Length: 399
Figure (cartoon, rainbow, N blue to C red):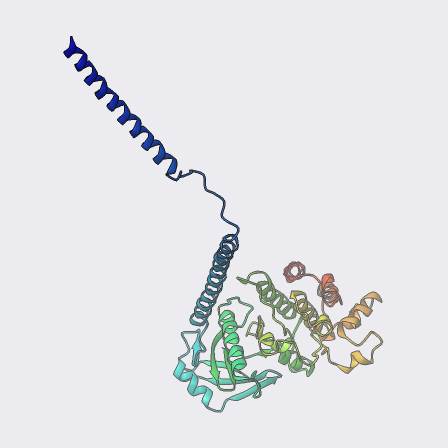
């Protein structure tokens, strides 16, 4: 019994020691947990001392981004501009030297040799002189020498004018119509250009009407009306059938209307006056529309006005610069004189006596006087178009 009691005491002591040891461990663990720092998941707001520093960094980042964008845009624009200038430079029309031939009948060397020789002078105009020459193969051609470049002009400006004229001439050489003079070739020279056309034995309408006034040529109403219809058909082609844009003549007058052996007219120097004198700075010829001098504007209706004067010349046989019109009470021009006689019922008095024949032809001529008068209206809107004129003239009995 005593042993049992002793053993029980020993067991109780051991258990007591284990309990005390467990309590001590728990206490140590609690103390460590209290002293260890606690990590919070949510971020604490920055301290007031760090706020300006973060703001400056943010501003620097924004400025860097903006500077990069602006620099990129400037570099892009400069690159695009450089590429565009380079493309325009390599694609611009080169200034050709020597003859530019559009007809297989003309040899370049033969043409240059013929131009170097003395040629027969046919006439002159404010923008050049006309010559007649014969090539080695027997082909007779008409040459117009232009001197459009001023000696005092800058070299770059002269090159620009030459390049523009070359482009215009190449375009004009591509036009094909029975009532247009075809450009067969052109030769660039140091002081201008030489234009090569087919030679017309009869010459210009101005030459023909001059011979009519001097009684050296008889020109009845039928060929005169054929000439008028041909001129209008040539204008109709220029105004309505040319691609990509219409072509204006700018200087339509009898000296620029050539006649073949059948008295079929062909318009020459189409658009040439605009190239040589872009500001229409020229002396009055009696064939220019009023708006050419009042506002320096030129339209297809300006060509129609010039045709109206030419038709008046064909009907009356008179030159529009004749002092007779200045001395008359009609207002000083061919158109106003015709309008005055028409309103007075005396249009027959204006007709060329050499073409008055049968009664039917006289009726046609009186109708043509009305057409000439309306073409010479002061306002462009009151004039018919060249397309309408073709219908008006071809409805006359001879056609």
